[in-house]
Length: 241
Image (cartoon, rainbow, N blue to C red; front, top):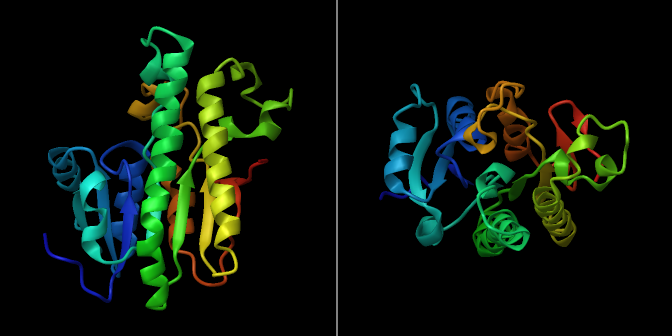
């Protein structure tokens, strides 16, 4: 595949072929003509099918299998860690241990390994004058502050321990990276897209429209040198860690 022009900022969105990830890709390519988006997916055919759904993108986009092509583009300006699974994906597993392991494998280990692999490419972008940005798509379900607050709207879902724990760990990864690269000027933030109608949650009837779930992530992905770092928020404002 052809490399994007050197003048374009390169953005990788993991899990970009569906749900929140696809909405992030769609919003970026519609609004950012100077960005080249790598639509991360496990299957190139699914990525190609997703791209066909984009309407007259201003920016450019390429599907990539993130496990094997991350280093092919020379640099990376923005990493959006969106890939993840929800509690519905593990309901049929035979034991609590198996459910916990499956959730952590994707939501925690996968996120950490991807971020670690991307840091050298993000540094190359920094060396070229760019502001590296990492966005962690996490969840208010991983908030310790929310979990301990009896008036929180999802207090009754504290039984979802494996999923909530995986998202709390993802928040910790984001928080740690934000401190590790703060002095270098990197912008590293966590955001909660909210409960949206996607396959992630079996398209729950009570969930909100998916498009708004991409707003905060795209804002964080397009920050400049004066932008915030080390934050955790949703579209309406700050979330407690």
